[in-house]
Length: 214
Image (cartoon, rainbow, N blue to C red; front, side):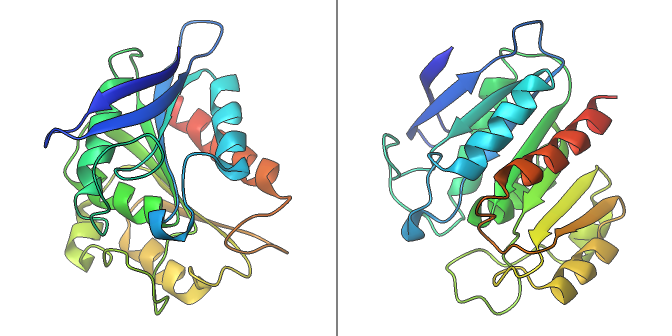
């Protein structure tokens, strides 16, 4: 389908890009990008690789720009109003594809996706890439409470690079212990940005998506 626009619950018009598989979609996915105030947008090699992998595995994939980024209206909301952006994207992609919906977020987008999924039963699973936790200094919402995480029983993939400066391994391990169905994967020899390792990260997420569809 290509470029499209859709609106949030609070009336913000967002720009997205919808890609569909050649055959009937088995499910759908939403991609949430990195921090808007640090150059984050849907236009990034890591997200391109993830999108291509998920489409190849039979999912209709909607990547979009958070409010205030590129062609999307509105302004930065510190990760709080952006939860509405993710909800709108999930609702939009489910209009074109039946089956489970995976939400995949990178960095800032991962934390926003996690908060949105807590309140959205339409999200069948989460792939959280480089989830920013610990003492990172970014303007990002804090993680959900321990009780909220324990109550979340849908599949979660926590993926990070071994040298991720915003997603330290001890903090991720604590997060994984609190999430009942979390899988923690660390790629050696890379960091938060997965430079030249985008395909490996995408394949890991693709495998998780295939398990979710199964």
